[in-house]
Image (cartoon, rainbow, N blue to C red; front, side, top):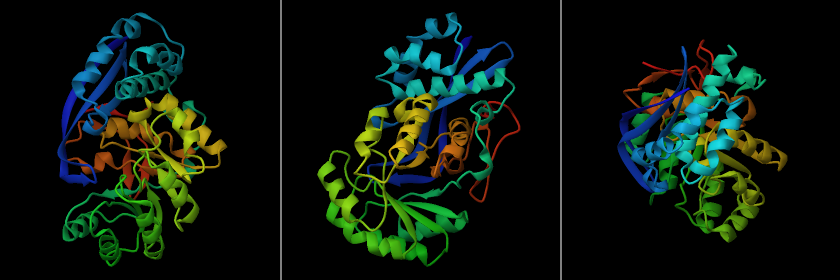
Length: 336
């Protein structure tokens, strides 16, 4: 098996702004695992908030090249377990490798990944489309540019309620809001009734991750459900979110790939929480990996490839929020 790296700068169609970040270009690493005529692909983007850079990812993966290339692994889970001791401090790198492994191993069996997992995609949730923070006029323009059944609205400004009111005037689509840790408990509880009246389904990560006391209050008093994002990074965080959140939003890059994400989804379900997977503005490689988890999810945020203008890959497509799988096996992703 051969380990190959591909790096790209993904150009965003619009400046993407959230409460703690703003960017026009998204660097990304695509990992290829090549075995004869078959190749598996996985991806992780850089992220300053989590200290993830392309150079650090490549350096970490170079450190395990001999393990990956010299051994035979029966399953992607075996590869994940073997490399985790070396990559546990770099889950972004682990994610790219793990996605590539799942893609390759399903292709070896001539199966799509969801088929390899024994899943039925006939009742998949629709993906939302994210509207990043901007002037209200531009946020409305972005929404009108792509009519969609579900929008996730990034908040964390001094006029959050006004933003949602104005957007509501221009669509009947469902809303979700994501404050990215920017609110207080008091704000969240106060905002929730009007947000609910404006057609918002849930609030994602309203408080800073460390504010557990505040989340206890929000969980008890908010009229809208709350989902964890920054509070749910790795597997052990799922149980910590019980009693603080109604559900968890799992990011493959943060937890280390599909292998731990599957365990996190199972744990959340056992604890009676809703399950969601989100993206980090990946190309069609990372987005196509997420797509095969859909039969296990209540919600999904996998619009990353829709936000970029120079996708270096092909994979899943979209039809008004519905995911259309590639005809190819594995995750269906391929470099152009």
